Length: 161
Ligand code: DLZ
Image (spheres, helix red, strand yellow):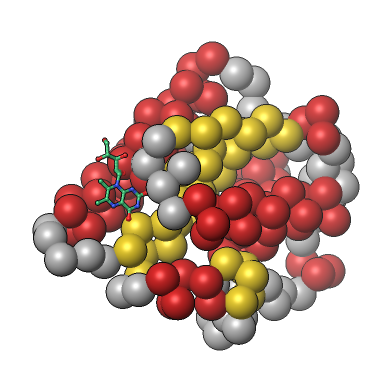
């Protein structure tokens, strides 16, 4: 993946997602941003062959709740990968640090506990403009990057069977 533009990647390096099943968990906090990330995820998954029937989108109140939403997919649904979408914007208190710490550790734990890809599609920015720049703005869309990562990780797991 490119680092400057989150939507730039080598299209030929992405396998077909035709038979892959995806869960997407979206935080409602900063919804203007997270809905744009969701658009990026859905557009990119479908561009690579995923079908509507194989994509399930669920909502949680905030980024802190994303790991549990992801765990519900692992325990109660039948998906190959889960994409977690959130946006935490630095404020005046330590809330930012606690939420970022919890969601990053929580996401890592889910990956290892379930042996399944849980993709970190979460923007952690100093201000709203930085988030807009990465949710379809001048730095592309982190949702596109998250979708490509999910497809590649599912394919990687399949390669072991
Ligand atoms: C409380 C809170 C704050 C201050 N900021 C954000 C944020 O920038 N992004 C986000 O997704 N959620 C935020 N939240 C909500 C928490 O993630 C969580 O939903 C609540 O603390 C309830 O557990």
